Amino acid sequence: DSGVTQTPKHLITATGQRVTLRCSPRSGDLSVYWYQQSLDQGLQFLIQYYNGEERAKGNILERFSAQQFPDLHSELNLSSLELGDSALYFCASSVLSTGETQYFGPGTRLLVL
Amino acid sequence: AQSVSQHNHHVILSEAASLELGCNYSYGGTVNLFWYVQYPGQHLQLLLKYFSGDPLVKGIKGFEAEFIKSKFSFNLRKPSVQWSDTAEYFCAVNPFGSQGNLIFGKGTKLSVKP
Image 1 (tube, rainbow over the protein chains, first blue to last red):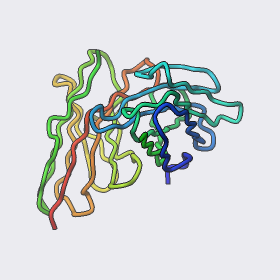
Image 2: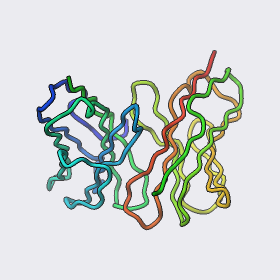
Image 3: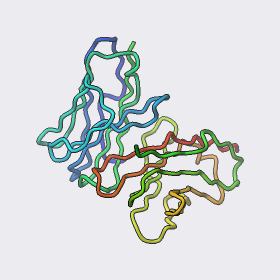
Image 4: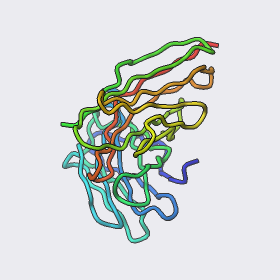
């Protein structure tokens, strides 16, 4: 158990819908990262927040957005869902914002039908 | 663009065989390097990491990795694998001085036959 929690564990929804994935970092960690894992793309970095502020952006679609709240938990919002958005979404956390070990949560498996 | 290459997609070994998984990255500057493991149905766990110092790093469960700067490589090794090592292994790079996001390789699936 890494100390990073993610909910829900599984999510099944339809195309065009919107979902919210939630992540709570390890106690004391200020950075939260979101990654998408799919069979064709592998593990891709989406976005990073540090202490409430966006710090880095990767291959995140415009239909996706994220935020980090004052209690440091983070939410990833996925809207206008497409079949291709089906993937495993991981959250990771670290103490600072650069050059550190990231600890990963168990992931949310999203299936878009 | 920075990238990480893991040359072997799927490796099949018998128990007690030695393991070496290749990882090469494309970035000219200083990097932090990581190997993560993902057991079936589980999340990513850190095996080992290299930030600086001795280029031979030891991790958990008997794994080690060697950083060879001239070859831009960070290969993972284990002298004798066990059935419980069956998992997917990911090499990841974080360019020094950049934000903390990791660039992952595509992963190598290891199957160990009992």
